[in-house]
Length: 266
Length: 317
Image: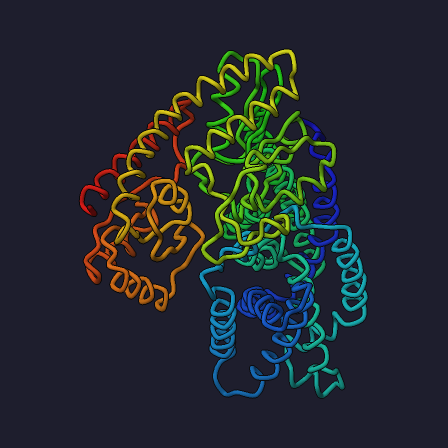
């Protein structure tokens, strides 16, 4: 068995993508979990369908572009509305998410042809190209810079928004920037991970890490470790067992979550 | 305490990695591990045809890319295992006509792989309106690729496979051609039954149209001489809109259609609606894209189809 999977270009690309994207998922997941944004990122993943549909309607040649643009607009809009409407954030997200999915499904299922797009639900490891890896590296660098300069401020805002504002922290800007970064990471990975489970990749490593961490440093370290471990092991497992890579990765991340939960609840 | 925690994390990850390794080892193993010419087919009907031409004496190591219950491959996604299988193949037999939408990916990954379209040179019917899949050649856009449902075209596909195998393995060319001749003889038995039906249908002339609830049946209906009043391609990938249901009922009533050919798995609900709303009788046919890996499965499946068509014709005339 060994490294026989490395002889294929598509597996090498997938491996490179996993090495770049899983630390990002681990890193961003910590903030998503701390800020209780799991539902937000889930809705963001589902908006990919609508982004593709908008691209199809507008005759865009590369629907990936419309998907990313739509996700960014969707994330910013969600942020804005959630902070202005009196209803709770999960209600607003649910309304937006359902509406967006319905529009996407209605357009894509016209003439009974939704099956053409059903592949994006479970993801396709062959869809990773060199271009996508370059995008991932770019997003990786931007996210890292954002984390280095903005993490403490983001953390302060997540603990107490009013207090953070009083200390001249640009809370709205940071929240929007984080939402846009989450949208980018989710959209660039969605084609090979799949809409149905992309959120799990963002949430599970951080949630597992939260079960056993005692401070912020550990929280980040374990989240990135669990994310990278489940990513690499899941990808290799998917090759030998012949299943889609996304679900294999999520199953391993779930196993880690349950094990840490048992350890943490002793 | 902290040391214990790190030890726990290390042991947990090591245990998961070891379990994955054991699981992968149990599961792994090249599907086409036999000797001889390594041939991979794209899906069930092509596999059955190739199985009959290759014979079962081990001259050819024959593997099917998709599972026997996958059905049509319009939106099939290649898995890592498929790519590995193809990387070791000498010959890849595909139906063609746009059914295998992943061929562009295969061509890109393995430019040297010998891919043969077994429907090459066959006269394909027009599709019910859907466009051909991505990756299909321009001239195939809007064509119906389910040509194995016409026994005469199927026999030509069998000969195309025999030619492809003979070219790839000249030392056994005679055996392949002999197998193809024998198999085509059996297919000829089915063709002559269809010819009998066709003669009677053409003699009657009027009110011989049927409604088809699967595009594949357009070939069988055309070979039998039936006209098509309405055709909806109801398969695993198609969702039906309310407007289409109304159109089909209208077509059944205006053309005086008395028979509907449907596939049980996907067309039962729609067929029931036509039966109740327009008074049509429903006859279930098999599109022959699923089944067991048995050399005679096409012959027995098509014979059952012919029996159903004979029953339909008895009522129509």
